[in-house]
Length: 66
Image 1 (tube, one colour):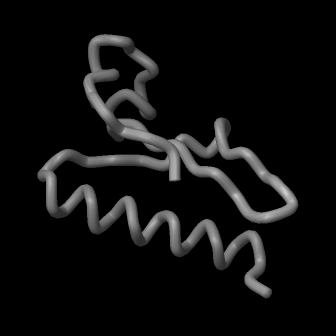
Image 2 (cartoon, one colour):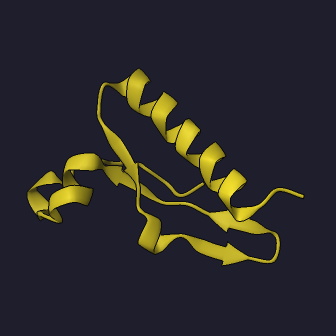
């Protein structure tokens, strides 16, 4: 079984790949992560929004949790 740290690392790697592919710096929205008995649900936003929490940078459309 994977640890929470290992699962989070896999999620971060996924976000990093998506970020590189899209050209938009992304960040896991760690405060919104949901922990369930069957796993974890991760949300992500643009890094600029995550750092500033300024709604004008909350511009991602169609980003769904995974």
